[in-house]
Length: 414
Image (cartoon, rainbow, N blue to C red; front, side, top):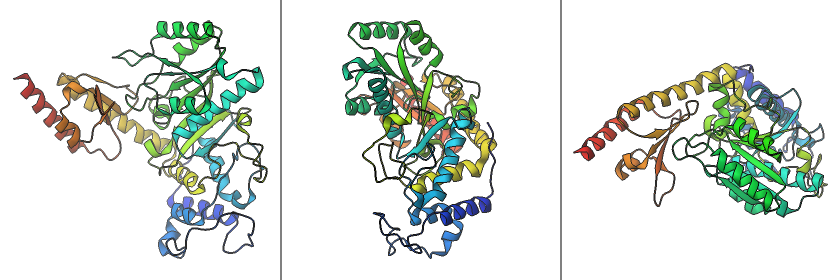
C-alpha cells in the first residue's frame, strides 16, 4: 500500500487544474445542461478565501459526476477534469487499500454507505436473473444479525428474501453450524443463488466477520454466491491496522466493497464509495438514460463532484503513511481504554483492529450514557452501549469517563 502525500499548494493546483478542464457555466456557451453554478447571492465565487479552499471552490462550481467514470472514457464531457480526480481516488482505494490489480476495478463516490451497499445487492440480483435465469424467489440475501440496516432495507426494495445469521453473544462471531443449517434449509425451500454480505466492522460492535470461515462453508456446500463486503466503517481503518487479512481484492471470493469517507476519513456526508470488479457494473446499466453520455449505472444518478474531490484531497493530504499513523493511533487509544475497562471488571467487546468499544449496558447508567453521548444498540431496551474512538475524543474526556464509571461501580457494589 503506497500513495504519495501532496502539499496544500500541490493539492490546490491539482484541483484548480481539474476545474479549468471542466466547462464553466460563466464562460462557456452551455444551453442544454439542466443545472448551473450555485446561487450567486448565497455562494458568490469571488470570495477571497476560495483561492486557498479547493473543496469550497469545487462546491460552488457545482460539477455533476453522474455516471461511473471508471468504465470507459465515455462520460459527460462537461466535468471531465474533476471526474479524473474521482477516477484517481477510486484507483487508490481499489488498488492501494484493497490490493486490486491495476485497472481491474470499477467504482464511484455514492451519497453514502447505504446506497453503496444497495448498489451491490442490485447488481448481484440482476446478475443472477440475467446470467442464470433466476426468479426472485430463487435468490436470497445473507447477512448477520449485527449487519447494518441497509441490508434489510435493500432486501425490501429489491424483493429479496433475507437469511439473517445468528452471532455469538460474546464474540459477535457468526455461528458456523447454524449458518450451514440455514443454507441447507434455504436450498430445500428452493433458494439457488445467494448474495452474501460480510462485515468489515459492524456499526454497533466493530466486529469483523470471519470471511475465511464463511467462504469455506459456502464452497463446501457448493453454493452459487456473490460476496459483498460492507466496509462502511472499517474500510478506512482495518487495512491500515491489519494489513495482512483476507479482506482484499486478492481474495477471489470478494466481488465488491463499500467504504464511507464521512466516518474514518472525516470527509463531508455524501461520500460513500462503491468498488467492484470489472465486468459487474454492467448489471446496473440503465439503458433509458440515453441522454447521459456513457449512460448511468448508479442508483442516485446526479451526484456532487465536490464530494469526490473532498475524499481525493484527504487521501492526498495524508498519503498512505500518514493515514496508517492516524488509524493506528486510534486503535492504540481504544486498546488503552480497553485495558482500563478490563482492570475495572467491566465487560466489553472490541475487535483489536477497530476503534469501537461496546460495553454491556448493565455497567452504564442513564446518567453516564447521557453525559458522554454513548450510543445504545437499541433505545427502548439497550443491552450494549458503544464508544467510538474518533479524532475528536480527548484523553481528558476518557479519564473523566473512567472516574464516573468507577464511582458508579463502587456505589453499586455497596
